[in-house]
Image 1 (tube, one colour):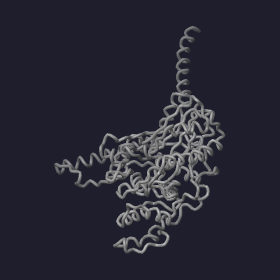
Image 2 (tube, helix red, strand yellow; image 1 turned 180 degrees about the horizontal axis):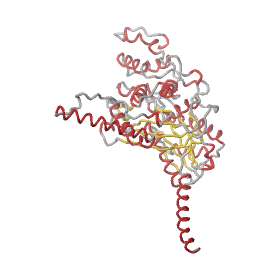
Image 3 (cartoon, one colour; image 1 turned 90 degrees about the horizontal axis):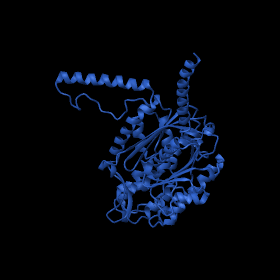
Image 4 (cartoon, helix red, strand yellow; image 1 turned 135 degrees about the horizontal axis):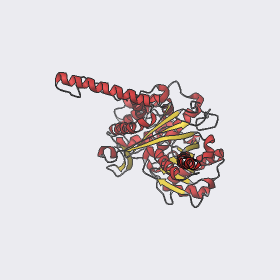
Length: 478
């Protein structure tokens, strides 16, 4: 009898051991954010209204029509007067940058943000196992990641990934690399560094699709410390729940809508094409289609399925009555998603690609102004800082004390290629905004009563000018 019991018990115990081992391994594959530090350049690099006017005025290739176009673009951009530009712009050398300008811009960011991050977390550089750096439009030898390794004397066996050309969505691509490493290796610390180098990438021509980039992009960056160490779970800020990447590079119109190229005069710039909104919408929809089942509760997916079936049956009935079914007959088209994302998401961290991007996502996901406020304020205060912009938005939520334990934050970003990447975070503890971040000195002033910038007030006279040669130029532009 005892032998029979033992023979029965052994397989059961072995099965329990396998289940426990599987569960234990999964716990070591989690991806946590220990801390992050966004970069705030010094005040002498702020782009005030008058200085912007002088920068535009000294560009030899711009004429009256371009001035009017730029005024309209800047006024409607959603960007304020507190954003930052590279030092070579303030030196008047934006049209003739050097390699040193680009490297110095990045090293200034590295020295500020990485230093603060390591100091605040108490992590020694020698403890870092993985380094991922993404700077899309600056490739140097040795690489920027090697410069970080040399500066902080990181270990000789550190795993290093240096990404270029991945655009505004690069930080989530870098995060995906870290996540996959964490799945196969236990007890690791990873440093993710995300930014963009603007110094070598000023467009000095007059093609409208390319001068737009000069209006939208601003200096910024973020250093993020991640881990899968179970012992650091209680110290972490966020846990990654899922991440989805969508790439439409196989479609020609998507591939070419956002591309670095030379104009007819051979001047290098960043082209933003007319097919960009269409490409972004398609990538966005495809990305939502994949990530929705991962982040929304079952009840919301069932509700959507029932509504979808009812609509199909209704449309089929109309088709039988009239023997035809056309897309234009009685069907109201809308860009709003039929899913209610607020059933599975508490906060929306939206890429600050521009006012139109934020508005479009707000309509698509049926978001309130409260949900869009972090992205709008980030665009106004810091501009589009490319791949790092998501983390400024997250910093705003933290500074406003919005993030509570158990709540879920949905990040979504777009990038050249064309790409749409998104992920979902779970807040691991109440973030009371008590640690200093880039918003600390101004968070009480946000949101302001008005987001309108003073460009129209100062430069509206340009719209009344018909002949540039006879126009009276204000003293501050001379």
